Length: 193
Image (tube, rainbow, N blue to C red):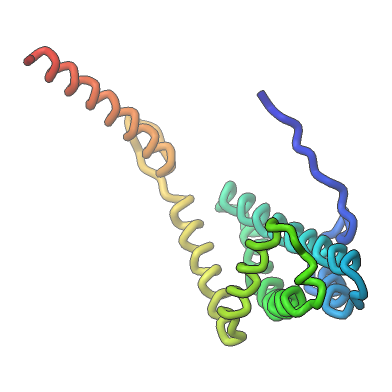
């Protein structure tokens, strides 16, 4: 049974946003870092907008990664993913740190009596504690190396019984053979008793 995917309408980030350069998303970070918050309602709206932006960016990166790993020979998909991790994410990191600080330093934080915010508060504190500007290029480099590793692994194949199989297909084949072998072994043990 396929359930329909229900995507709530965006209220902060444009629905047709195309992340083609840093400037296409910088305006959202600028808005969040400079917005005046005078009430709990303003603060909740700010949190909602921050969450929406983070979701849009995470989803965009995830789709770039999925598309790239599904078609490891398509250079434009690899370039789109690499662009995001080398040009966009390093720009996001300082803003994300600033937004975490704004989130935790707001006088309206104490008015959030809902335990649903406990995890977000812990994550923000941990991210501030771990943030180091000098790590930004290292993280980008690490992600590039992970991407290269994924491309190499995704392109690996073996030949089995005249068919070329990806490693994932070969693993499935191997699992089936192991299960069959275990069943035969179990039957032999049962007959010996």
